[in-house]
Each structure stands twice: as structure tokens, then as C-alpha cells.
Image 1 (cartoon, one colour):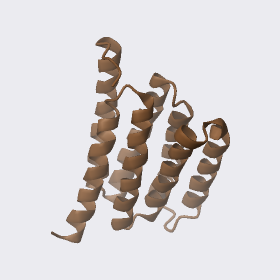
Image 2 (cartoon, one colour):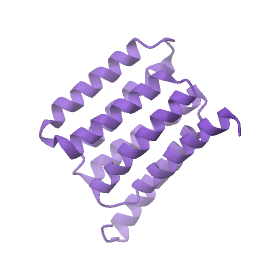
Image 3 (cartoon, rainbow, N blue to C red):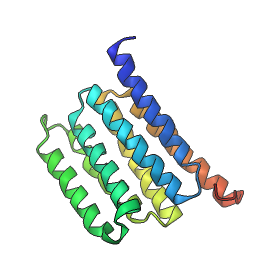
Image 4 (cartoon, rainbow, N blue to C red):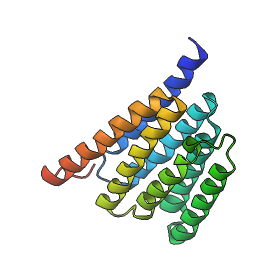
Length: 172
């Protein structure tokens, strides 16, 4: 097995965990899968030498963990701090190309999804917008796992919302 294959396989593992999360109606289960998947995505981006996305996703994992599970009373301050860190990281990025700045937009979307973690529709809307941005990041950094994961993740969000809204699926 080649190193590149292994790196992409790690990305697909993160993808699998992340996609499953959107099928939970329970918000805590969704955000638990986000923390786990983002931790694995960090490893994937380190393996493919995409430093900016690796650091941005690791900050996002910590942000989600702290905001949803540890210090929800400080969510505004924690989200602002995470956004500042990701913005600074991207502005100081090593290559100066547009792809290095895309995590700022994604961080904004996922920060809003995390901020509204108790609102089913708002969190899914902002997560879906973030998925669209991560498709562009995947294209820029040539991460087949990210492109696939974000496309399927966006589809999973739509399917989950449809299931939970129109079929009144019971909470899982």
C-alpha cells in the first residue's frame, strides 16, 4: 500500500464518520461525529502536506468540542477566538493562493453551525454551506477524499433534513 493511498484512506474514514452524523436527529450525536471526523481529517491533511486545512480543521475540532460539550456558556467568545486563529493562520499561510484562504469562509459557516448547535435547521444550513466551500478546498488541494466526502456530506444533510421533516423520523 502506497503512502498516498493510505493518506486518502484516512480521509475516507473521516468522510464515513462525518456522513453518518447527519443522519442523527439528535444534535449532540451530530456534533460528537463532527469532533471525531475533524480529528481524523486533521491527520489526513497532515499526511497530504496541506498545512493550512490541517490546522484549520484541528482548530474547528477543538472549537466544536468546547462550545457544544465543555463550555457552552462561552460559545460566543470561543467561536470568536477560533475564527481569529483560523483567519490569522490563513493570512500567514505559506503560499498566498486563494485555496489557503478558503478555510476562513468554511470556518465562518461551521462557526455559525456550532453557534446554533441547538437549532436543527440553522445548524444544517450553515453546515451545508460549509460543505460547498470544502468541495472547493478539496479541489484546490487535490484531496479526492475531501471532494467525495463534501459532496456526499451535502447530500446526506439534504437527505437527513428530508427524512426528519417530511417523514417525522423519531430521534435517534
